Image (cartoon, rainbow, N blue to C red; front, top):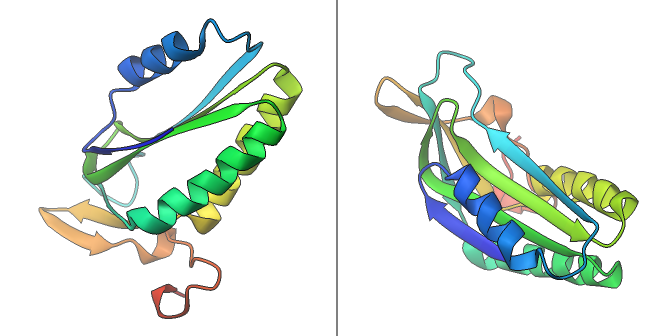
Length: 147
């Protein structure tokens, strides 16, 4: 399950919903990762653009990997502006075994940072500025690559 939200994420509501959806499915582990906007470089927040067709394809491949481990993965991400100390990204893994979930969430989050077609902008003094120093070029992206 992948869901895109406008603005900052309501972390307690999303996690509660996911937990309630899966609580009766005999998973022994529920491991979330929550990304929060840090106060750095005098920013007021971050803004995100998402290319959804590629993101959905990328996420679908991860769902297939999770299924092979009898696990499931869920993800929420912000589109648009997210202010300081708000969340822009939540991922979680449900798995029968804790080790599978721990290893899977780590691999998923690292690949997300390297591969997801999401572009980040700094919000400073009412301006939206491409965050080149905090961006990662997507492998094989050609003109979409940054560095």
